[in-house]
Each structure stands twice: as structure tokens, then as C-alpha cells.
Image 1: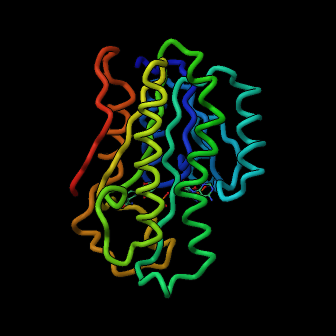
Image 2 (image 1 turned 45 degrees about the vertical axis):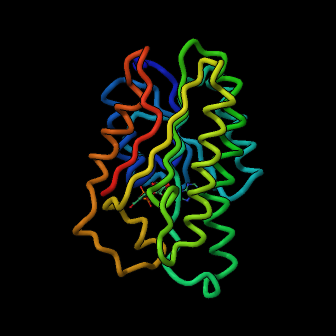
Length: 226
Ligand SMILES: NC(=O)c1ccc[n+]([C@@H]2O[C@H](COP(=O)([O-])OP(=O)(O)OC[C@H]3O[C@@H](n4cnc5c(N)ncnc54)[C@H](OP(=O)(O)O)[C@@H]3O)[C@@H](O)[C@H]2O)c1
């Protein structure tokens, strides 16, 4: 897709991988619309920002309505926002962590996506890219809740591919391993092998490549082992 002047909605664009994607989209002159909480790292960027806590279904309804009112034509949706669950056996994981991880990493993607699909379908060319994780296709020790959410994103993405097959909306899933961001630290996890991880700008390059594939080519899965 040629993304110049196209309206691209991105969750998780305020930090980490999503922030790097936002910077690359700006250089390609896309019209970037970020859904997020903390505006600090993007305040100097030329983007539209909509404040929303993705754990709150009411905020999702209001935010998506506000965006569609201002930008009726959405050409791409990049679901990147997500949080980590500090590794532990499930019996030790607090219910609040369960709720936060499932609502942020899975429920929000479904609720946001369903609200943008009518606009995406109305375009001649459009795309949804869901960032899951390697933990969305391979079980990880101590990652029960995170894997439950990320395997859920995998299932949701696969069904979207079927449901939208006859439409203009192309769907892709991204399943990467460790990336050097603050995601683990934010969840209080310190035992993280950062030295084996990938730079977020490299993954951002891959996500933007997916979005900007030539018209008659669609790579719909990216699996990155490290
Ligand atoms: N880092 C890795 O090793 C890795 C590996 C595989 C998959 N992933 C996935 O990649 C995605 C991005 O991760 P990252 O490493 O870039 O993490 P990050 O640096 O912590 O960034 C997470 C992003 O998600 C947003 N977010 C989190 N909770 C939110 C909420 N309740 N409401 C609104 N926005 C919220 C944050 O926004 P605010 O700052 O505005 O709160 C931030 O922009 C996630 O889905 C993650 O699961 C990461």
C-alpha cells in the first residue's frame, strides 16, 4: 500500500516498538493517528493523539467514535499496544494482572478492530496488522496469562483473514521474540536476557514493510525467532 496521506491508526504508538513504527510512518508522510495514554514521547511529533486506556471498554467506544468522526476513512489499523506479565506460575499471578493483561493484549484488540472494520472495508485498499508475539504461537515457561492473550490474538487474526478474505482489507500477524523495550521493566520483571534481544527499530522496519507491500503481494505472517 502506498501510505502517503493515508489515515493509519496505531495503538501502542507512544513507546517501544509502536513509537519506532510511528517515526517511520511519519517519514513516509502517512497521517498517523495514535491511541495511547502517555503523550510524553510523542508530543513533538506531527501526529494526531487520542487518549485512551485500552483496559476500559467505555473509553474504547468513545475514542473510536471520536476518531471516526474526524477521520471517516481509515486505511490501516496497527494493533501494537500490549503489556507483559511478570513470569511466574499461574497460582501466584494476581487477579488484577490477569485482568490487565487480557484486557490490554486481547480484548482491546477485538473491540478496537470491530469498530474500524466498516471504514477499512470502504477503502479500495486497507490493512490490519496485529502484533502478537512468539508467545502467541509457542508456549513460554511462566507466561500463562501473556500466552493466553497472545495465542488469542493469533486466533483472532487467523479468523479475521477468513472473514475479510473477500473484502479490500488485508490482515497480517506479527510473532516476534524478545525486543529491547521497557515492556518487561514496566511489569517488574528484571530477569530478562536483553543481550539476546532485537532492536525495536528493526522490528518497526518489518512492520512498515508489511504495510507497504506492493499491491498484489501480501505476506500475512511474520515469525521472528529472535
Ligand atoms: N518487547 C518484546 O520483547 C516483545 C516481544 C513480543 C511481542 N511484543 C509485543 O509488542 C507490543 C509492543 O510492546 P513493546 O515492547 O513496544 O512495549 P512498550 O515499550 O512497553 O510499549 C507498550 C505500548 O502499549 C501501550 N499501552 C500499554 N497499556 C496500555 C493501555 N492500558 N492503554 C493504552 N495503551 C497502552 C503503551 O502506551 P502508554 O505508554 O501510552 O501507556 C505503549 O505505547 C506489545 O503488544 C507486546 O506484547 C513485545
